[in-house]
Image: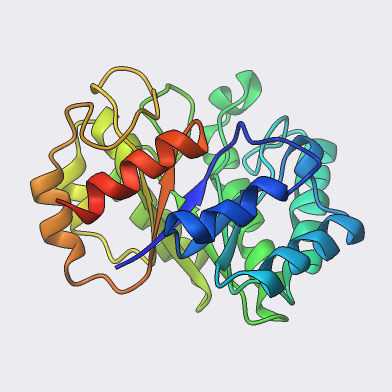
Length: 251
């Protein structure tokens, strides 16, 4: 079992904290490319310093704040592709997988859902085509149960993958998000290639430590016995991540 760590809130310019992940027992680090961790050549150089000094596998979460792959406002959609695509160009030499959020329905998009869906598909296709230059997989994450978000349900995620129709597109199973939609069983049946682990009580996207919510971990971990990829614990702090890692190892 290979387990990585990711935290949206570890939004520091310094990556000194990442060196402790190896010592704690994590096998990987997934960086969220937002805020002070937005990608530049300098940031990539610092990531490479970490990877040279540790045994961590590295994956990355493409930026998502204020971006929308399903935007029907063409300049916004163009900017979304530009920023996500630039991230892939910078990441191409240091990872083989990037995670992406599908788009969401803006007020206008809600009036034009078919157009928004097509924009979302086209956007992911564009990202896959960029990523293919580097041998990188674009893995689409299922979303929490929030109205207007695309990719909340198993059949919707599967439909995205089928319509994108690229050899380098995959599914990131987010167990916490699946718990919020009450459709965990359906998501566990999908052919996913990346996994996010966190817990909640089925109401809010709390990202609490594993075993402290009501996710059915017996069912999840039984399914994951046949999974050979990286399990990424999404935690609010390194300390909470360490707790979840120890809980998972001892399950």
